[in-house]
Image (cartoon, rainbow, N blue to C red; front, top):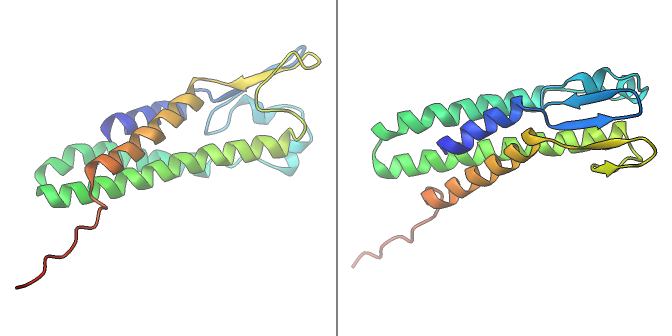
Length: 158
């Protein structure tokens, strides 16, 4: 959970997406960037909202801090809370990824996510995008490995 939280924080801050045309070049992070300031009419219709990224950053910070605090808890309680915090943080990371994909598809409806050589256009994901996917996978793996959400069968009384 600690590594997933750290990768998520770095992934949110790092550049996510770039788009370069014949003269101009833009980039976008999870919090916005120069891509939203481009002179495209769609930006006025669909403004970028950094709220999912800020919510994800809050959960990532909690998961990092909770990794250190949870060592003082009993094992069963620790597993349960590690599973809950890492699951919610992974869900927030996926929410941010889905939001940026949907925002890009609304702003640039006829452009694929990765494009190269389409009439002086070059665009695609950057390191922050991949770090966020890796962090989400690590957080969900942490939820599974902790076994804090698994139901144990009740013992029959004799």
